[in-house]
Image 1 (tube, rainbow, N blue to C red):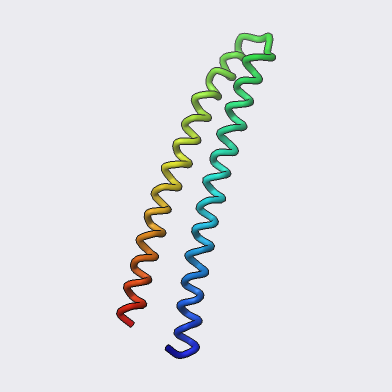
Image 2 (image 1 turned 90 degrees about the horizontal axis):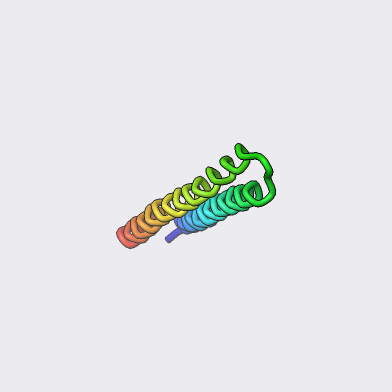
Length: 96
């Protein structure tokens, strides 16, 4: 394997690692948003004196769970895609 091919393989490996890290960072952002929504809803329920603020608090809590589920599903789908790409890259490396 010459220098150019080795560099190409190293770049592919680094690109996959960056993609994995970005996927994790995105999951953490979803979870952070979910926690913020849940805490905001709980705060509105606990501290508000107005009925409509309590309804907003009640609505925010299930929305936070939906955001968390969407983040986890998105993470899982992208992780499987990344793993498939790794397997394909390894197979291409063996064939070359």
